Image (cartoon, rainbow, N blue to C red; front, side):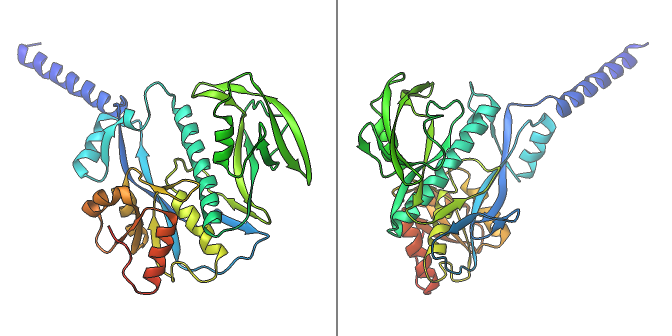
Length: 338
């Protein structure tokens, strides 16, 4: 084999090796893009996203769509280059989405926990907005819960260590000064009967205080509200869930028949917080047909810089702001804008 042939063969083998690496070896990057949107006034898989029983429910119209960001993981060099060249998605370091030191399963569980918390906060904020009397209940017992055997899902929580609780936040505050191994008295109501139970608190690596092992929820004193949307993670749907509850429990149609989408975290007091990925969420909303988008106040600058044509941006700092903005739209008045 002459030198020219050897060079050609070597170059071919190198090109083949690069090609194989480019299509098989993952790079430490992920691609972000528009994800699916879901109408919180509608159904997913035949199940209402927000269901209300035992309370007066009023007709709704239009859309109140929550929005998501799609994450493409396990990218190869060639797929990453394809996303980068096309501009269809933003390529970012994988560590920015999947923190180092935590497994994919742990990240998924964190996202699921944040989503469950957003559902609970949305219900509390909506019920407070409507001044509906509420009660705190055991929404879920975590795996290997120290409270297992003492508490059941659906029990109404009355007091923790003698401290009355009227919200999930109050339960957390009552446990803030405790320590793992400490015994606390939980006062609860089951089937109309008030009882006390002593629970030895467990431990968790993400907190110093004792672990009760209960995810508290909120319910109206009469009736029941259920928010159901599986396979979605993170806290950013809270605002849209809360608006759906408000719309269903109040006369009149909050959207006035419009296709409204939005995003934003929410706490139990109704404060709306900023989120990530808003350019993708706005694009997904506009592609789905939205004409108005509810933007957390902390995201306004980014939203204005990336808003698709035909999408009106409403600035939202609280749940009350969001309701007022939609009321203004419905009345053909100018809402608070970014």
